[in-house]
Image 1 (tube, rainbow, N blue to C red):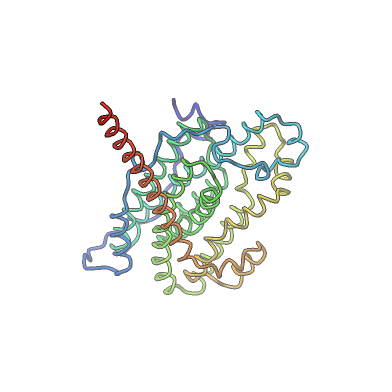
Image 2: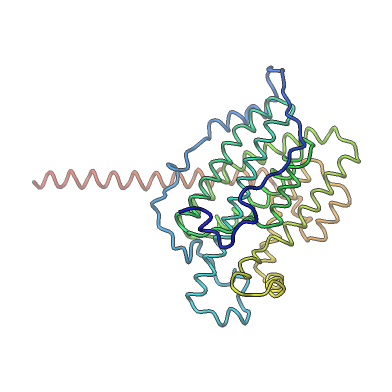
Amino acid sequence: MSTHELYTRAPSEPNWQIPSASSARFSWDYDDGRDRLLALYQKGKDKQWDGAKRIDWELEVDPYDPLGTPDEAMSLYGTPHWAKMTEKDKGELRKHYASWQFSQFLHGEQGAMVCAARIVESVPDLDAKLYSATQTMDEARHAEIYGRFLHEKIGMLYPINDNLQALLGDTLSDSRWDMPYLGMQVLIEGLALAAFGMIRDTTDKPLPKQILAYVMQDEARHVAFGRMALRDYYKQLSDAELREREEFVIEGCYLMRDRLRGVEVLEDFGIPKAQADEYTEQSEFLALFRQLLFSRIVPCVKDIGLWGPRLQQAYVDMGVFEMGNSNLDALMNQDEEIAEKLDAERFAAEEHERVAEVEAAIRAGAED
């Protein structure tokens, strides 16, 4: 079935084009680069995997409860609209919310793939080009996986959120080579990682848990790459240049916090936009979720050297300033460990089944 047949509403345009203002840069220096970055490049090569094989696509998914979302997590919960909904209506709402979330993940991963390719093109250092090439492949795999999950398991897609699209457009249209790092690696992927992590750690559904755990294992490397490259580069910038980047971060953070809330889902259920905005503002779960979305961004922004007074005040106003003290390395190590543990548990279970089958065959042979 065509993707366009699965959209809840038609995308504004079938193909979105962003004029490029950046320059393609070649480096003729093929000597060894930065040891940390080359080590990350080696890890990127070693950790490549096939989404068609590593993920167990035979696992069943209930499209009306794909993530095991509790009632309290729904922004309509406790409203007059919720009181009127049947169980079938609530299942349909869960389906739409999961579709909206994973559709934004899918569109974001395509954006990440384009940004990684742009970094290959525009970054001046060869070691960064080499690593970005592995990330481009990672992001292609993620887009493939989210697309397959939406097509085969949920059967519904949402167009890209207008504000996510706006941030992607700003990131890709900027002529400065570091902006795809800042817009994508720090802001968009930072928000996505926090959202991935919340679902990964709360869902009791094995297929989405696998998908999110394995994607996050890759993303741990991507965040490390962005931190290395930007930390080194931002040490060389003037105060004025740093303030420009901080303004971009502030605008992007407010945009994502205030506008990426799934209001489109409520509108599809016949709720006027003003009321849908009000419901999402009043949702206690969504308020907590929006705060936790910045758990990966704030420490990363601080780490790369963007920590001026105006940026700090913006994070105070958002109520997320204290997250600047979070241990980003520990979070990324945890992402690696969760994926490896999941693999170990799956392989152990498969091995146990194989042993049981062999033992049963031996017993059957002995009885004959």
